[in-house]
Length: 440
Image (cartoon, rainbow, N blue to C red; front, side, top):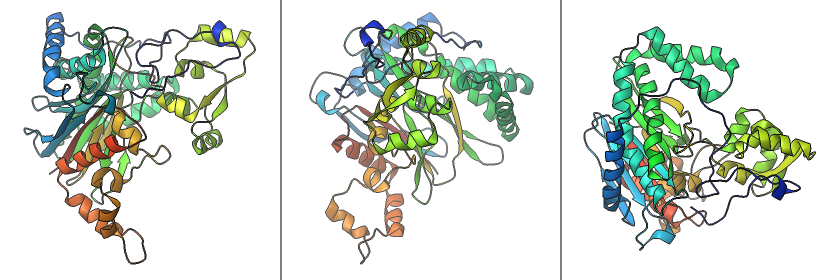
């Protein structure tokens, strides 16, 4: 992670109103408020499996996470999909024995594909790498246990389970009607696909105990591709933390299709950040703006009701917070309190690709305002001289020529270029992990 440190909630007298201790690397934090999901948890992972996963993770980290760079490689065994992955340590780890704390999950047996971003805890050095590796090994086992149980549900029970999960994530009882309609549509599209969704969510939640035992924390973005009886293909994605998924359409356009668990998104969902205020914050992402004091703001920044009462007693009406601070403050992950993953379902057509990336990649290329990325930067990684081939006589980029070239690149080449562009960027120094799929 970058060297900058995350500052606790600012206040007129911060030493008198401290936040709970922040765990891990402080510029990405987990919310520590005492809000617990009330719904039934996933099937427990047998203790022997958890312990074996931790031991296996310790042995296997040397094979992948110890290396400075792992060029893009293909993984076979996924019907109708090309699958590739690549990793690179951040600059300060290169040439050292420190592991890459990011990791990839590619499991042909279960069909799970994704990325994980470990965060070092208060324990031994390397706990973040161990946490992401432990999660990688446990999530497929948790998926198999959850799928076995969910396959026994009828459609009524399945809909109830799906609505429970999504209501827990939304945190708004008034959203029940809208969520119920969406889950009905998912079941109507394909009941078997609808059963994949809760199994995927439970697989991520089910890895929490193993991550706790590792001594670190990790984010996780895990996908399952499902083929429907009518020949359509869908990507189901469970996400907890700040990894991201980008979909590339056949025309070369790339859009972000998932939402990170950041304080920024949390406050946007709660209606705390108005469109006008958000627009001002985006103009100067480092500038602090007065955000009206509320429980939602305190929770998003790592506090709870006690901290809110103390601020109110002091007469504090607002907190100075910047766009950058809110975006970099993570409110959920694996390790510690169990958080509900978000669910994304998107159709994947022939020729389209999805890139699953850790924040070492997404923070470099993402446009927070539009959710799009510059394909020239992340997929071509070209020098200025080579880019001249894509300009017309008037000096403008020829979009058709550029798109044709981008889409002609093999998936491995595209993600190698993505990794290389991020590693060379001066915006951020962080570990990188990317997995990607293309529908054949």
